[in-house]
Amino acid sequence: MSILYTTGRESGAGHESRTAAVESTPDHATAIAHPNIALVKYWGKRDDSLILPVTDSLSMTVDIFPTVTTVSIDPQVRADTVVFGEEPAPEHIRARITRFLDLIREFAGASGHAVVHTRNSVPTGAGLASSASGFAALALAAATVYGLRPDRATLSRLARRGSGSACRSVHGGFALWHAGAGWGADGDHSSYAEQLYTSEFDPAMVITVVDDRAKRISSRDAMHRTLSTSPLYLAWANTCAADIAGIRAALGCGDLDAIGRIAEHNALGMHATMLAARPPIRYLSPKSVAVLDRILHLREQGLCVYATVDAGPNVVALCHESDAVAVAAELGAAGEHIRTFIARPGPGAALVSGGGA
Ligand code: DP6
Image 1 (cartoon, protein in one colour):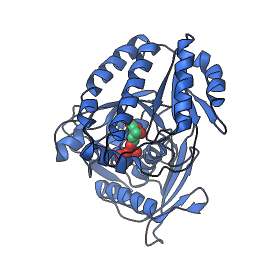
Image 2 (cartoon, rainbow, N blue to C red; image 1 turned 60 degrees about the vertical axis):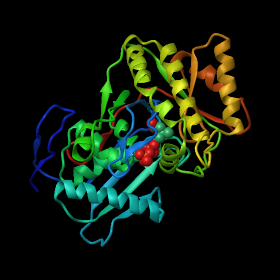
Image 3 (spheres, rainbow, N blue to C red; image 1 turned 30 degrees about the vertical axis):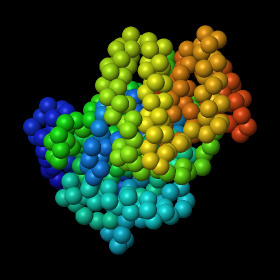
């Protein structure tokens, strides 16, 4: 199959149009992507359907808990099929993935239903960004089988349409998601993530799982409720630009203390906005607070360690790689049945097979 496609104006890459020739399209493709943990959070959309955020956000893609997704086009099937591990995906997830595949088919001018096999190694729904690695891997595998060859900015924009934070998992290391400007096509074209280059340093994250059950309220619903009811939301959103500037400067000189200080402040501020929503949203559990206390205690003892928490009870500690084992031991002892995982900066989304990986 040979297709020409045009992605239209791409303000991120500074092109008015981009056309790629696709020599041949495989009938299946497998992609791998890793979760990312935001240091300046994405919390709040200015457009729900295009998934355009209110603020810029900044994250580190990790090297553990990958999602591996294979997409095959099957002319025999009459609807998209989605398999999670060995089980058919629940209907609401299948419907969300079908909506995403419809979008890719529309961009590609292609048809044909797909069979999607996806394997998550992160506890799904526990506030550990499984949707980020999931939609980054799906975007790459699906774009490939439907004949698109997107550049990184375009792939990031596509992944964003599945789940906002997925646009950052397209990149390895540290990534900045530009909120972009405007609405409709202007907003869409200007809202994508780019990779940030950093000076040599040794960041690690200790992912502390206090509870791996699916959360009661999804981050999508929670951010919507926060935006529409929390009087603290705008105050927090107004701090994000300075937080991004501070972390970018600190990444440039490898100042982990400054990065951690800003990240912790930004995350606790985000949780404060939710506590002030109506009805309130509280993701932090007593165990999360016990872990946060331990982090504070370690810091008082002179360790460079700071916390961030996504939309869930699990706490992520940012520290130097050389301290990670000691930090993990200390945080694992904060309560019963707490598991810790050490992560380092990981790679961006990649094809494992299909499309000349
Ligand atoms: C708290 O990307 O899961 O992890 O765009 O609605 O799918 P949707 O939301 P999602 O939100 C993630 C929110 C967060 C913060 C972050 O990753 O920046």
